[in-house]
Amino acid sequence: MSYLLDKKVKNKKNLKIALAVAVLLILFFFRTSVWSGLSGVTQKVFRPILVAGNSLGGKLGSLGSYFVSKSYLYEQNQKLQSQVDFNNARNANYDSVIADNANIKEILSRKNTKTPMILSAILSKPNQSVYDTLIIDVGSSQGVKVGNTVFALGNVPIGRVDTVYENSSKVILFSNPGETTEGVVSGKNIFMQLVGRGGGDFEMIMPKDFAMQKGDQVTMPGINPYVLAIAQTIISDPRDPFNKALLTSPVNIQEQKFVEVEQ
Image (cartoon, rainbow, N blue to C red; front, side):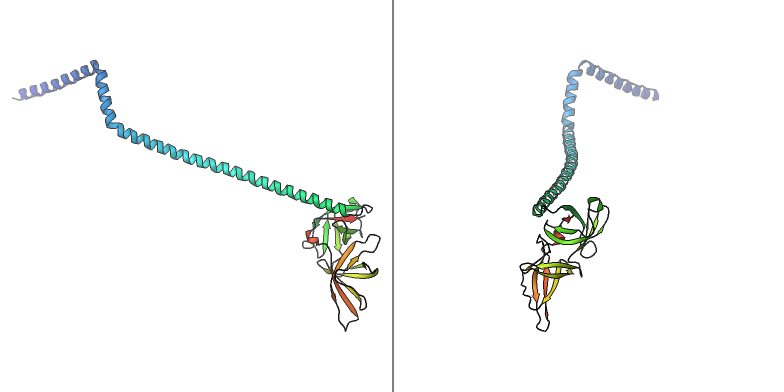
């Protein structure tokens, strides 16, 4: 009985092998049509997956391109911004040079050509140095000497050279507190003393009977009537035998970048 069962199982196994061989032979001889059919079936089964994969790949590629493009645009924007900053700085420097050139031309056009002058840049102004003093960039190497008069705007005396170094000098402004300067009241030819009050201001003490009005000018003694100060206020007290005039320089030294030193 056992023998019959084993023989039956063996026959089924042989049948399966025979069927498998037959299938392989059929596939071999008719491989084109079969594989085409299988290819069609496979395409129908896997097409949605392939389409989804292609779509996802396209989106991922587009996303990658977006980030690459954004990074590139950011770098280009930074380069352009740097170029704009450079151009703005260069233009500002150019404008400054043009303004200085115009300022120098204006100064030179005002000065007396018969009086030799040395043009100088201001290195330090009263708000940066000792009160009512300047530091200028010319000195003994350029022929500057102690006592030389210093002018602003080409024709307005503002101070005198106090100390000379090789390539720089210290200038005491006439408006320095306590500094006294001889002056002539314009139109009256009367010599008076101006006393500095600081910050470009002066005061002048005069006799009670001396008539002086706002706007009167006080000039330096000499052939060239350079204006030292202009009267702003006249103070009079009946109990005081003297009047006091408050005057101011026609030049705001804080606005100046250049001066000239008379030789």
